[in-house]
Image 1: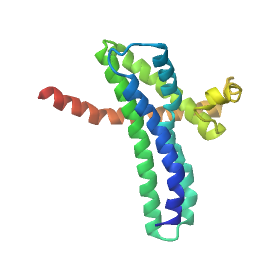
Image 2: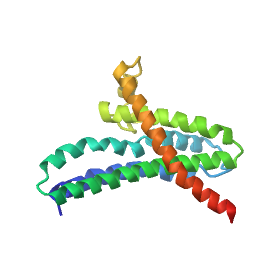
Image 3: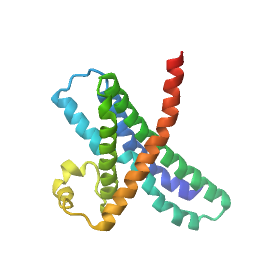
Length: 193
């Protein structure tokens, strides 16, 4: 096995586990007609704080270039592309699935009109979260562990920051919309039975 691939397994596994947290929370929290207790709201806050971890894996592509340059064979390069592809696809699917669970619950509770506003707000929060994680090296748990470090960035952003967050928002919106097509086909098949 390629040394670079083996070296990636640790940090990639951690990132996949972090990407799975919001999906698992969505499965538990977004059950139709579930009582909205204080604990449920804490769970929703945790879901929102951890949701950026799922699409965050897309930014791990920054590590790929140097690893491809260091690769000694075409097989190693192919292995790296497969490894990064699986990582990114996993993150995007977990992100899309988390949103799909939320959308379905809103629809089942008669709140379908809130699906798009909720999803757009979550894309915006995730875009900001990804920026904070990739460029400022903050983590989801820093909201509680180091709130001062997080709050120090609450100010008028630099124009390049706005562009980065805007591009991230478009990528997230596009990915989530692309995932919606297979889900919609699945729903159509189920409805026709």
